[in-house]
Each structure stands twice: as structure tokens, then as C-alpha cells.
Image 1: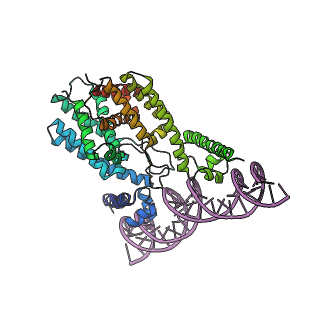
Image 2: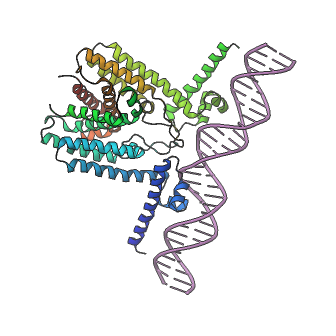
Image 3: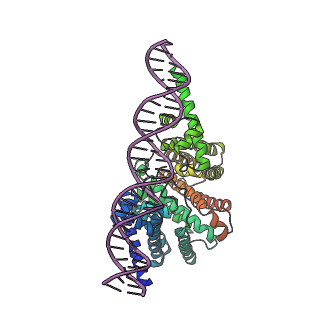
Length: 208
Length: 208
DNA sequence: AAAATAATCAAACTACCAGTACGATAAATG
DNA sequence: CATTTATCGTACTGGTAGTTTGATTATTTT
């Protein structure tokens, strides 16, 4: 068997394991899914799983990476697909919110809200791929806003990138955490609150 | 032994266990601290530990509650001690940053960034005490700002409370996560970046 | 096709730790 | 002193990540 074919087979096995794990993680939850579960569902023996992945965390991280690429891709579309600055902004926000609602666990990992799958182990700081790519995207986004004179041309671009990112991710995080209280205390559902917050922040960003 | 004395003794034991756990959690990390560790360090048998606390999570939550009270107390001082709106704002921000740096793990719990100590278990949604009290504090803070005409009197107070909270906590969270990249990409350390962000946000809040 | 090599398997096993059970001791109470 | 109550120590249960091993099956080489 040529090296080429062997590689393809290995990729095939890895993919099988990953998609089994992905499905189990989404239905049962990551912590509730055991390595035996994954092995059984993917139809490999546990030992073989450990040939392809060195730990459960390794599997989890691979899946997170997949989702990272998906999210980044979607966000790129938001920025590139629309020529309007304001439009890009709201599309990005929606995109993030949708992603958070669909895959809260992965979103949390992507956003660095958690560090490890196994609380018995010391958290491992992974290199923050989303973080870096996101920074690039938001920079691009802000440059666009400055070029079309939507936002002040004299702002300090670099720190503002992080600042904008902080606000948006903070808004999403709090909205999710408080979604149940929103109805009672304010007369808003989560969607309405998000719209309000994103708009308020947007307006604080553009020149009026 | 009177009921009074008995109660005092129980409190004494609980406190001993809690402060041992607190110390171990801070030095070794929560996940790396076993119940046997706590028992040994507090000088009780493990069985006795389980008389006073029903689980490791229970211990952890009690400690989080203590820190909650401390943080809330400090934040109250920030608002009540200074008559100036802007001053209150920056004091609050500093207070939160200091707390985050001193007790990152507890800060994360307080802020709802994590749900459980034992990743084997399904996360338990606890009632969000800090969240609620914080909301109250920020509301008070914003009312002060409106009363002294610092911020627009026509803003919708309730959602703005959460909005402000989102931004501040988002800024702190991102600053912490990116502190190493800050030096390279921008020429700022974390403190400088925080100052910049808090100021930018403050200015977006007040009428100019 | 036979021999050699590599991939996969099943199942038993280790290590770890939260939480429990239980009988022994020590301390307070009456 | 007798009884109740708090504490203790130790051994145990249950669950799960990760390992080991020797057998089995598939693939490659000669």
C-alpha cells in the first residue's frame, strides 16, 4: 500500500472517529460521553481510538478546530459579502449569536471560556486560533468603516479591535446567561435585548 | 451542650474545613485538590468532611459565596464612597480587575464563566447571586449618572444595566486572555489596554 | 501462495478519585 | 455510669481515562 493510500485511510479513520464523537458530544454532552461510547459508536476498538488520538481531550480539540474553521468562514462571508459597514456589523453579530445558540459548548471553547475537558487535569492553554483570526477579521471590518468614514479616522485601530471584540462577546455572553431573567425584569426576550445592545454599541462606534 | 454552643462548634468546623479547602484550591488548583487532601490539611477525617459538606462542589460553592460577598462589598464601596460618577466608574472597573487578577478561578465562577467543578457531572445552573446584586449596583450607578446629568436621561435604564455590565466584563475577560499578545501586536501592556478600553467605553456612555 | 509485517481487536487491567459504609473510639450529656 | 453523639480510620463502590497484551485479521513482500 502506497504512502498516499495509507495516508488517506488514516484520514478516513480519523474522520470516522471524529464524526462519531461529534455526534455523541452534541447529543449526550462531552463529559457524559466516554471513550468506550465513542469506540462503540464509531465501530472501532478502544485501542484503535488511542492509535489515532492520544486522549479524549485530543479528540475534543480536533472537533473544536473544525468548528473554528466553520465559524471563521461564516464571519468572513459577513464582512466580504456586504459592502455596507453597518450591514457587516449586524451580520457578524447575528452569525456569532447563531453559532453560540447552536453549539454553546464549542462556542465557549472557541471564545476561551474554558480550558479543559477533564477537570482532573490542569488546564492547558491552547493557542488561540479563533482569537487571532477574529482579530484579523475585525481589523478588516474597522478599516472598512474608517475608509467609508463611518467611524472616526483618528481612532487607534489596534486596541479598538480588541475593544470591539470585548463588547460583542461580552454582550452575547451576558445575554445567554441572563436570558431567563430578561423576560421578568425587562420586558424583552433575548433577541430583543441583543438587538438593543448591538445597536447601542454600534451607535457608540460610528460618528453621529 | 446547649444548642447555641453546638451551633458555634459546627460553624467552627465548617470554617476550618472551608479555609483549608480555600488555601488548597488557591495553591494547587481546585481540580488538583482531592477530598483526601482537604481532610488531611484541615485535620479531619474524610467522613467528617462529608458530615459538614455534601460534596466537593458544595465546598467550592460555599467558598465562591464568600468571595461573592467580598466582591459585592468592595463594589458597593466604590459606588457609595465617591460622589463623582466618573470616579465611581473607574473605581468599579479597577475593583473588578483586581479581583480577577487575584482570584481568577473564583472570578470566573462569579461571572458564570463555568458551571461545575467536576466535569464528569452535568453542570448545575446555580442562582446567580453576584449577577443579581451586581445588576442592582450598576443600576444604582447609572441612576446616579443620570441624576447628575452625566448620561442621557432618556436612556432605557434596565437593558442598559446589562449592556454596561456586558461591556465591562467582556473587556476584562478579553484583556486577561490576550494579555500576552497585547505587548507584541499593540505596544501596550494589559493595564494600559484596560485603561484605554474603559475610557473609550465611558466616553461612549456620557453625553459630550 | 507463503512468510512477514502492520492494523485492528477484545478484554483484562491500572490508576485515580468522589462518595459511602461501617465498626471502633472518644467526648459530651444526663 | 450509661447513653447518646461526634469523630475517626479504613476499606469499599463505582465510574472512567488510559494501558497492556496477546490474538486475529488484512496487507505487503518475496
